[in-house]
Image (cartoon, rainbow, N blue to C red; front, side, top):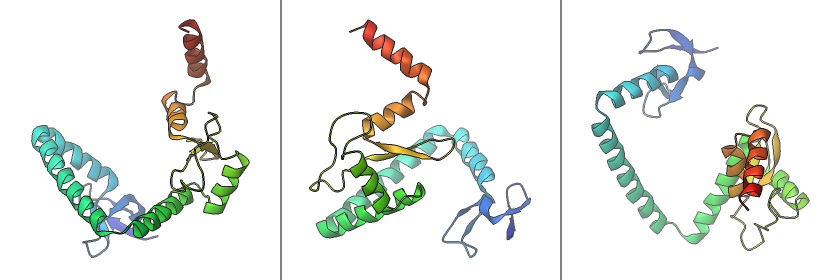
Length: 172
């Protein structure tokens, strides 16, 4: 197991506890993730206005850079890029594009919760979200963005869902 010494806490830690930094020789940050987080909080709390202004300027510059890239890339390249992003997102859940397509067909090309059809051959990149249990990581079904958000907002609590149902019935 490879290790590295953190310049923040000066402890020897596994390299998995360090974030990436492509500009350094080792390819890793000099401080561990925990120390990086503490350093960022200290920087923020020392001068929140300055910190927020720097972030705003960075975002504006980054947005302009992205717009320039979009203008340069052709429609063909952007759909290719969307396809790659889809693959990497599915990979995070242990799914292949074929697994996704199988699940989608099994659900009749609909969100598992609401009856609205969300996908068609024409809208290949308007995909449903992969819903999963945050405790176990087990994939449950494909949901539209709104339904997936609703599950998250109720914190997967059946009691909250029941209270929400009763509330809607009461105020119908």
